[in-house]
Amino acid sequence: MSDDVLSIIPTDPQWQPDRPAAERTAALAADLAPGQDDGIEVEIDVTWHEALTPVDCGANLERIGCPHCDASIDIEWYADLLETHCDDGFATLAVTVPCCGAATSLDALDYAWPCGFARFEIAIWNPERDWFDDDELATLGDTLGHPVKQIRAHI
Ligand SMILES: [Zn+2]
Image 1 (cartoon, protein in one colour):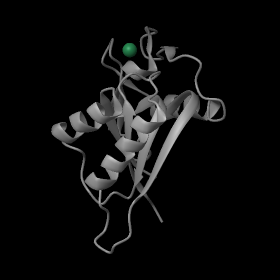
Image 2 (cartoon, protein in one colour):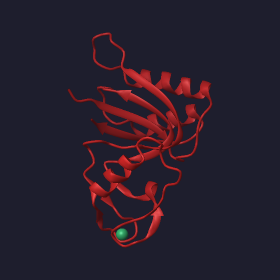
Image 3 (cartoon, rainbow, N blue to C red):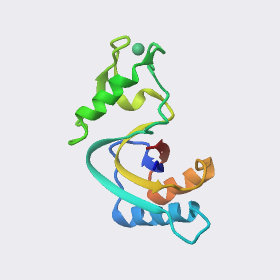
């Protein structure tokens, strides 16, 4: 069985909230994603990561674009990187891309669908809803105390 996971992460990969702000934001996310109409609440995971951790879109990843030369970067290259760092996370997002050799940040690559890196994540499992709209994202960010972005994974 596959799952859809809608995750909220701070736009700054290093940023972490305090616990009360995180709990308020998770409660808001639960209100915004009521789940299936059967009285069962969706499962929401709130995680603080020690190190920079990839929040990727799983099977929804179609393309990675280079911000410098616009080439498509081999998705296998990204998958290998994630596998290498799956236990201990990333100490830095600085990277040399394989297409043109530019020095950039993993967070600056052009992912379709969106992917990110974070040390804090709110993951909503099988939310049974579409993307958050701009107003909802702004409200989630205000509640958390930092602007957020969303990642939608199919796993
Ligand atoms: Zn390039």
